[in-house]
Length: 162
Image (tube, rainbow, N blue to C red; front, side, top):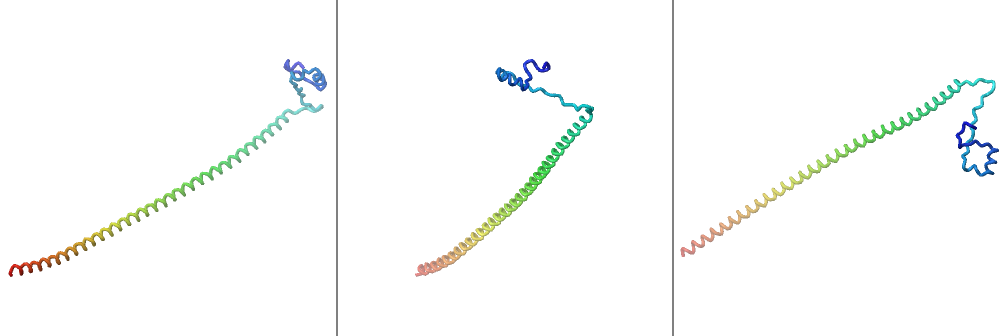
């Protein structure tokens, strides 16, 4: 046929047998001839009807794609909402944990300060008691030593008189 490009040829089943004998078939690609659609004889073809059916089919396919898209988007939106809720819940839990941890730390610091103050008071009391004991011992020693000196003084006086 003249409407095909010059390098391409159309082959029929008869040509196929001839080409296999000649060995040329490997070099030339085979193109099948397109047959025009058969038009029923006696009836008129309603192109408007064909076009309308094609448009309805396309519309139905488009609506299906739209429905699938919005279903997918709805699922993704639900997942996103769930994720946001989970993040918010986790954030609230973390804030509560930090608050409890800070409260425990404050209590611990308070206990440590009270314990330190109690120990310092005990040490001060012990030091005061030790000081009181030392003073008492010293005063007792002084009184006894003074008494000893007084006695010794009396002895010295007696020695001098003799």
